[in-house]
Amino acid sequence: MLRRPRRNRKSESVRSLVEETSLSVKDLIFPLFLIEGSNKKIEVQSMPGIFRFSQDLILKEIEDCLKLGITAFDVFPAYPESLKDSIASESYNPETFYLKALREIKKEFPEVCLMSDVAMDPYSSDGHDGLVKDGKILNDETLEVLARMSLAQADAGVDIIGPSDMMDGRVGYIRELLDESGFTETSIMSYTAKYASAFYGPFRDALDSAPKFGDKKTYQMNPANSQEALIEGDLDTEEGADFLMVKPALSYLDIIKLLNDNFPLPIAAYNVSGEYSMIKASAEKGWIDNDRAMLEVLLSIKRAGAKVILTYFAKEYASFMK
Ligand code: PBG
Figure (tube, rainbow, N blue to C red):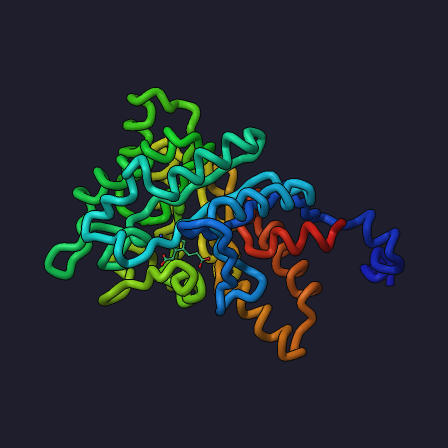
């Protein structure tokens, strides 16, 4: 036998020489959940180790994470029902607790890369990402709301806007309004290929944002499709996105690779709540090894072609690597 692939696996030192993919804390964005009030830190029941923080404690959490080398954060607000309405008007109220916290985070830690979420669902009494009329999700009318929300977030100082709603044309619409308003430096990480997935369940618990009727299949993509991801990638590229995101990550590694092979923009992948909780639940039962599973999952997403990974494991990974 001339070829013996095992020779390159014979020791730790040889294995590390031939290692093709490496993961770093710098690749990660840590999603954080924000609630109104002060001195609140409430664990998300379906996401062990993940909390909803009030503004004062989210600042402390970010400080802890910075010490571990995490430099990018994506903040999601959890709104009480009392502040929701059918047009998500709270989303662009300049005094709303989400925008105030974003402002405060940038003031206290100007060096962090702060990302925000653009979609109606946390503020919508219908629990959908767009305006609802007669049981339908309106596209073009929703763009106006998304753009107002984006402008308010850009004004609060965020570095990257993350439209997670999947309305057609929203990246271009938001880009234009941001530019007209002088926010030419605010980036857009588009949720380009966001699938209608079962793996968002724990996130909807965290935000109390589950749709009040129906599902999200008229705007989020069909898990059976990959060609469509190329159409979405083309549109987001033309419309001025700075990053293309695939979500979820694990059942869509082929889509990550597809976008990475076809577009020069950096590809991000969202290792979503259900993907996190599956590992936590089985590790709690002693059925799999938490740390090894975490490392393998994050590495696989990077290997598939993601430059950036949004993951609830960010802090745990960073602590593990210290
Ligand atoms: C909604 C949104 C969702 C997530 C991020 N933004 C859920 C959904 O589409 O219902 C899911 C993130 C996760 O599961 O970790 N705009």
